[in-house]
Length: 138
Image (cartoon, rainbow, N blue to C red; front, side, top):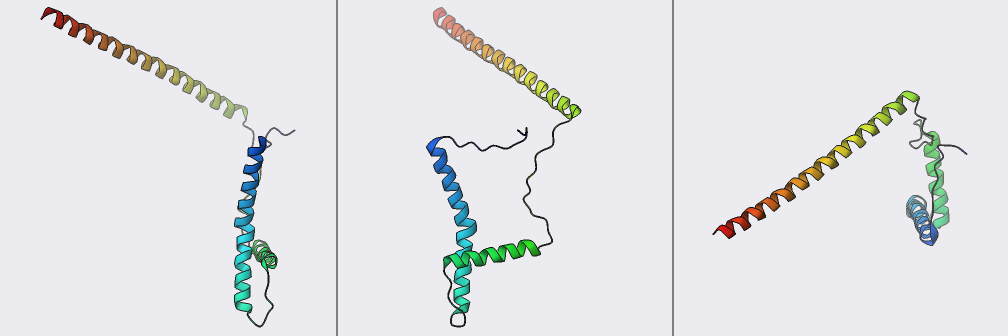
C-alpha cells in the first residue's frame, strides 16, 4: 500500500447520506444545471428550424461543449492529482527542531501562566487579609 494514499472515510449511515448529498449537489451543479441551460438556449434559438430537445439531450450538448473546450484549450488542466514528495533527512530534522521549540515554548508559557495565576491568588488573599486586618483594627 502507498504511504501517501489519500483515504476517504465514511462512517455509518449518516456518512453515507452526507456522501450522497455531496455527490447529488455536485451532479446538479456541474451536470444538470448546465444541461438545463443548454437545453433552454437550444430550444429558444431553434424554435421552428430545429427540433426541440429534452433535459438528457441538453446534458449531452453540455458535455459536447465542455469536452470541446477542454480539448481545444491550450492551457493545462487546473486540477492535477499527485502524491506529495517525501521529506528528505535535512527537512525532517528542521521540522522536528521546530516542533521541539514549539513544545518548549508551550511548556514555558504554561508555567508562566500558572505562576501569574498563583501571584494573582496570593495578591487577592493578601488584599483580603489586609481588609480583614483593617476592619479589625477599626
